[in-house]
Image: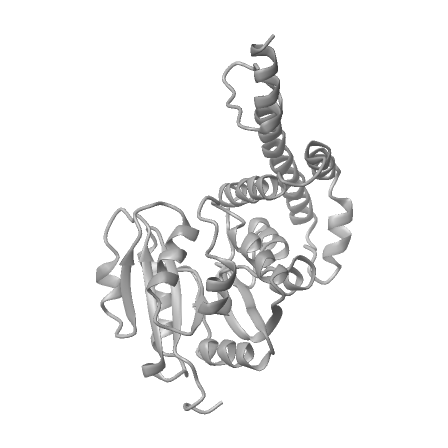
Length: 321
């Protein structure tokens, strides 16, 4: 791909209170193999406690925007609207792109006919590269599996996505009401519109693994909420979500064997720790879905908020006698 055929690329990064890791991300983006006059980096401050402008202004390629309405998808939408590029590249403030990330991702996008999105490779790294803890292994095994997402679920995580601005013009922006799962919902709209989707192993970024149970629990809870809300429109939804809950409550033996011998922890104590973590995270997912289900579908319970069509209909029927 020569410079005459290379499009202008806008890289979009939402950020909230993470100046140290943003610095590393912007350093990597400042030193890309892609021609400097053909890309910009838009950093969208989404309500940081302290201004991130001192970090952003160190880098010639970067420009700061502000989005006061909280939500990473709202911030990304702001970036999309302000972007000058024909091609849009998405990553996160805690990610470190490889030096040829923009070059390889854009090249892959242009090479696929009628391409709607490209999901690049996400490589996890650990605090201790030679000895990841149980939380870090869990994060690596169960999140940001780009190739699997594209093959089986028709989306890619926005930690590493390339697309065209015209695709957003065709299918719409991210759903700003979602706090998690917005990339999944948008990717499915892209797929439904007939666009191709592709995985690019050579367009890689590095992502830090979550290294504590507290961080994992927060992530798992967000994902459980996203799963719930993204499926609410489906027929027989209460039965479907009950099926999900029962699956969550099953012992994680199948998951253990699916991980495989090569990646499985070997030390006995570590095995027990990892299995305990698997069990606890399954319960966290089930608990969140149960809470949401009870809130939605059980009327007249003290302290609960109801918003589903089912409970509204029941309430109106009772009021009308």
